[in-house]
Image (cartoon, rainbow, N blue to C red; front, side, top):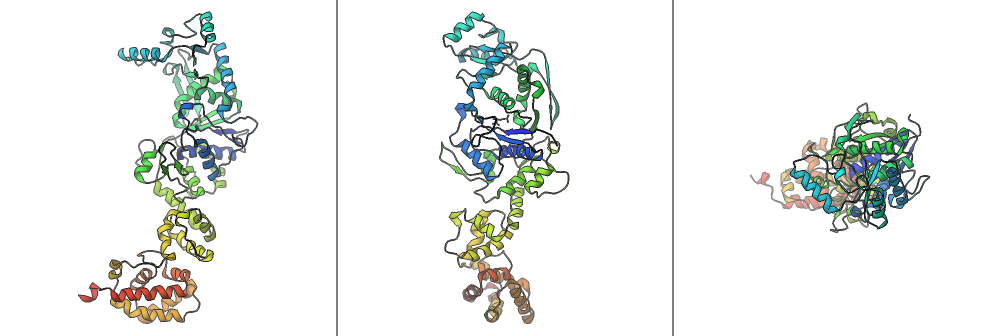
Length: 516
Ligand code: GLU
């Protein structure tokens, strides 16, 4: 057990939460719960150009749907609030200036044109130097090259400036990643990143480090894409004198395309027909809505289970985990370094496993959330019985649309399928079966199974010839639940009517097998 654990999920509201982001939130949540720590939600909304309306609410809704409840966050507050960076601006200016005063950062006044000129010059020289670093900063307009008076004048006259980190020239920066081990990067590979922008907003790096420190974060668990920023963050901890309280880092592997190469993107989902967002998202620009896992009929428990296993591997072979088991078993040491290949079929499998364990009432209640194909005018009891059957065969609630229809509407029997059955035979036994069913008062599944078994034995019929024809006659389908199950759910009256209608079809359609 690690003590005093405080972790955070720190998304930027620049669009809908991707399932990769949801996995990051989940791992933070599991880690916090496992160690009796705190899980925080912090909204990193300092990149004002990339803000997307509705994205923050979407993040909150997604976490709520998955029941990843946080202990501190923008909507519930907490001792280290506010938890939205746009409400903490006063702090960042203060800390940026502190770094300037301590000689770890400097003002830079270069205009966009001047920076562009430097970029062009470097590329003409075929240089791989980074644009603003130890080798170039002396050629630029900044508080390292201007006199103190001039810097003051420029600032006083309102000239725009940024504050850049002063990266040491020749230093090996080392830190330990809980998943990847010791990482070592030479300061030569870093540039003097902007920490504070001319519009008065901090960049991600400054705000992230300041907030992690002020919020007493003990472990930074985040996506691999942030690994390259970590050396700068390590330097910032040192510049501020916060080294001894620096959080531990754990960078999670990428979620890969189903092919196993490259990062999973929304385009992959569109191309292969699976969602990459937890909930439906309507793009505010195009007005286009993409369904999420919820709208495709996934259960949040299944999403959590399959996401947990995308990158983290428990010690045994167990695949189905209740949340409390995930919390119990989770450890950073069992997270893989290499990317985790996304497999939608496996995700469906998980959902099926969860769906089939739910009682019919629960499934029926979930179905109500899909009004577009929730059957109207049906009794609750009947619906529950149908759900008990469908959940055995469907992986997603969206599949109930087609699989459920024949229970609510009498089927039209496709001619080709009728012709596949030996009509001559069906016409012989179906009238007799109708009579037997008519005499049957107990329409429970077990009694019906018995009746069918006896009927087959008495007439010397093969199950393989009779049952598929009956299933077709009852539901108009070639595959589906057992005939006794179907009959028990439909009930005596409906079974009798459907079988009589089917007998009529079998009798009226030419059967090539008989004619030839
Ligand atoms: N705001 C960053 C993001 O959008 C947070 C990265 C981090 O966790 O440090 O993912």
